Length: 395
Ligand SMILES: Cc1ncc(COP(=O)(O)O)c(C=O)c1O
Image (cartoon, rainbow, N blue to C red; front, top):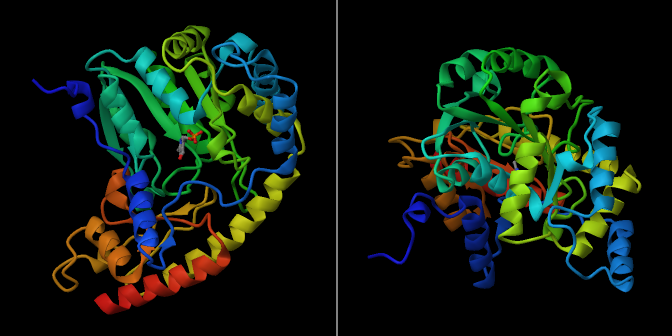
C-alpha cells in the first residue's frame, strides 16, 4: 500500500516552479542563465511598506491574529474594493490568506464535491487544474485560441456548462498571456452566467494594477448582477512587489468566506501578523509607485514584443496587462527543426542558449511559450538576442 494519498497522485508539481528551479541549478553550476520564467516583479517592496512591518514588530504585533485577517486589514481591503472597484463589502464578506494561492485553494477545497466541474479557460495559471483535482473536482479546460485573443467567448462558455458546473474561473489580466477582458467582454460572459444560476465565479484579479495603454480594468462583480455568486480574489503580491510576504484576500458571499476561514482554522491559521500590518500600509499608503512601475513594465513589454515579432518563426500578440507575453513557436515545430513540442523547444533553449522560459502546454495550450519580462532591460536584451540566435539555428 502506498504511503502517498490517491488525491495527491492526481496532481503534478508546479511546472513554473520546476523551470525556476532548473534555471537556479544551472546558475549554481556556473552557467550564465537568463531567467525569463519567474512570476514575480523584480522590484523591491516599497520602503513605506517595509517600515510598517518593522513598526508592527516593535509594537509587539507578533502573536496570532484572527484566523482570516485582522480587522484593520479587512477594513483596508473593504476600502480598496469601494475605492477602486466600486464594490461594497462588509468585513464578514472578506477573508485574508497566506497568498492568493491559499485563498483560491481554500475556496475550492471548501466548495467542491467529488465530480463537480470547474470551467477553466486555457491558457490558464498552472495551479487551477491541480487545485481542482486535489479538491476532488474535475477541471473542464476550455481552449481559447489566439484569434480570440486567448479569451473565453460566450459561445464556448455556454458549451462548457453542464449540470455539474460549480465554478468558472476568470483571470484578467491573465497569467500566462497578459491579455485582459474589456467591460463589454465581461458583460457578454455575464449574460450566459446569469441564466445558469448554479454557477459561481472565481475572479482572479491579482494583476489588476499592472495594465498598460490606458486599459480600464473591470471585475465581474462590479459590472454584472453576479456579485452574490462571485468570489473576487486579489492580493498584494504582484501590485506591491510583495510575493514573499504571502498575503492574498478575497471578498464574496458570507457562506463561502466562512467556509474558507474554517479550513484555514484547521490548517495554517492566520497569515503572518507582520505581513498583514505591511499589507495595511500597501493598501492605505501611497499608490504612486504602481504607475511608475507599470511604466517601466510597459517599456519592457514593448521591447520584448517588437524583438519577438522580428524573429523568423515567432509571432506574439501584444497584451495590455501583467508582465508576461505568450509567443507562438508553432512554425518552429516539426520535421525541419526536429522539435516536436513546445516543451522540447523550451528545453533546448535552456540547454543550448541558457534562457529559461515556460512551455505553453504547462498552461494548457500547446505551441507557445511564456516569457516573463519582470527582469532588467539589460537581461531582456541578452535574452532576446539568445532567443533569436536559437531560432535562427533551427531555421
Ligand atoms: C494568476 C495568478 N493567480 C494567483 C497567484 C498567486 O499569487 P500569490 O503569490 O498571492 O499566492 C499567481 C501567482 O503567480 C498568479 O499568477
